[in-house]
Image (tube, rainbow, N blue to C red; front, side):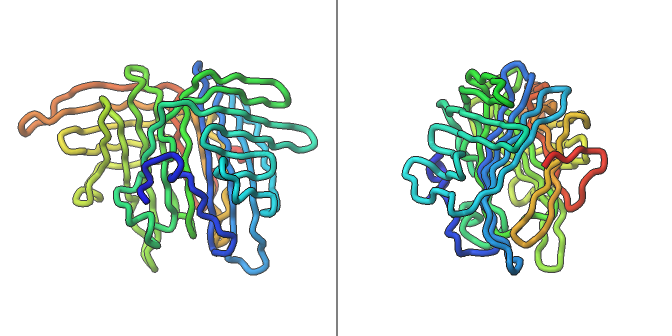
Length: 336
């Protein structure tokens, strides 16, 4: 079935038997004044390592601009997961994701994070991979779909009972599942451009392993611009596309038929938080993430044989940008 609805894109793939296997739902938002960001994640993991039992976890990160993040994680028994709930895609303990809400509670003896966020229409849903067979075949190992590429949420996030209201904040929600992680990757998303609130960007550049070989970084980009969807690069231009990222910046130039997008993403190192992922093959991956990066996007239109400058779009403190690698960067504080 095509992954073109929120319901189908968020359908639970976990059966409790397959291993190695993992499944993740997450949501992220930045408040309307770019004063704080929030990221929550619901995870299932069935490791191939002998003796490891299947686990479920929920975590949340609340990051005010210029301040340290508050982060909490709780692990649960898989028996606390509601696999057959008709109205919820996943429920782990008191936390759940449904067609209408993202709700959660994580706490320890000293701190507590709760959230109750209602998704609001309109919602854009889009698989990032260009071909449907990539969601059915073994390759790639990780399947990714932006169930809510761009949406809005209202509700609140509370840190130790201090409420931070969200009133029609732009948000993003996605779903991943698979049998193993890529070697390393960069991912970015923005739906809060200053000049045009309807524009949406998502990019992924991944280095994967094929047998004994490691591929170059493979880029995938998606744009919603002037009401039209653009994807690139095409297969013929996959390794010809200008695409380079380091720890703090990402530069790309991608041609989508008669339109060219040239982008620069950046982030201040003090706004990056670190999270360690455990993969289903026992692999460790270290995520260096900010929800409050910056972006410049220049748009060009083809006129005869030339590219003509058309428009500049900018975003300040509203761009999600993460880099993931097998080793942690020592400059980053790891919160989970």
